[in-house]
Length: 345
Ligand code: AHG
Ligand code: MN
Ligand code: MN
Image 1 (cartoon, helix red, strand yellow):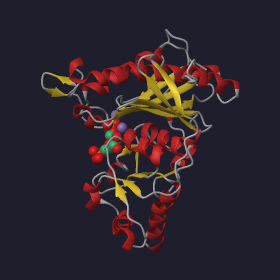
Image 2: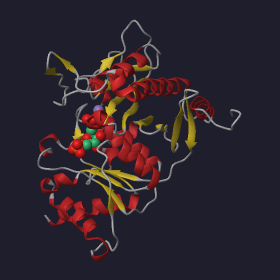
Image 3: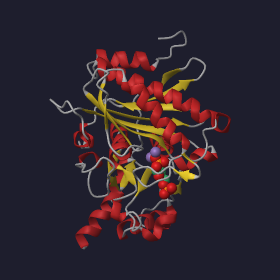
Image 4: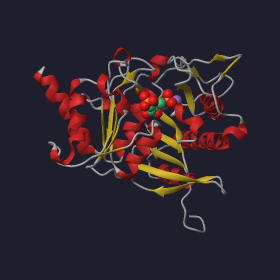
């Protein structure tokens, strides 16, 4: 405990190790990711003064990632910060990122560890240039036994196999939210001291909510059960749900999920006819799965609309899925609309 009674991330992790929840290697891994997030937070905070705004690429040519999306300078920089920080510590066997076509094994010049790290280095890219919250999302898996040369296929484990997951949101405050499978906890960055301090131990998402998050501009492209579900939310007190709902959409998953962990709600990026061929908009391995573990560990629920998210067997590193997560009863309600629709069909 420091003089003001604060528990730093370092102490929290040592206590998790003593409790048998993590080993020293996983503790190091989380510390390294947290340190990289501090660096990203500094870069994000500099904005135009640091020359980090705008698109990546050169000679007027936009840089395009494997998703077919134009990369921002901060997407590329954050990816580099995470790669560099995690290369040499000896805690990883390999890494995979939204911004890289394929996974990368740890170079042979460094010792290899037992874990695999996946990340969305900068989530909410469309908000970078307008000074709205963005973040980093990460997921940790065990490297399968006996693997010496890590390939993409070794990452294709269901969300239930995650040994840790978290995100860092760069907003008015920089907050790291973490689970190692024993609850979900929040740490606020003390900018003067430079350390993450435990500010919420054991987050609990209220089971019921009156707030939903979805990009309503996609309404006409949604599937019938989603149309029916949101139609009933909008009908409010006079409708079948019997209460008025409020709506929020930051368009940074980290910020929307952080609000839900703080005060409840349902977040949804459903299937729509624009993204149906790709399976959805959000990525399973480094967006949906880590967020789903954090939400479940906080007493919430996470689903594709038709299956528990953490049970999805991945088929590709950059696989996309429909996402419904947040307050348990509200996610169950959304899933119910899909089940009734599918049964009737
Ligand atoms: P990323 O910036 O990592 O590509 O992710 C953006 C995602 C997610 O953060 C957000 O919920 C969603 O895209 C917003 O999508 P719309 O712009 O379609 O609302
Ligand atoms: Mn993202
Ligand atoms: Mn991203």
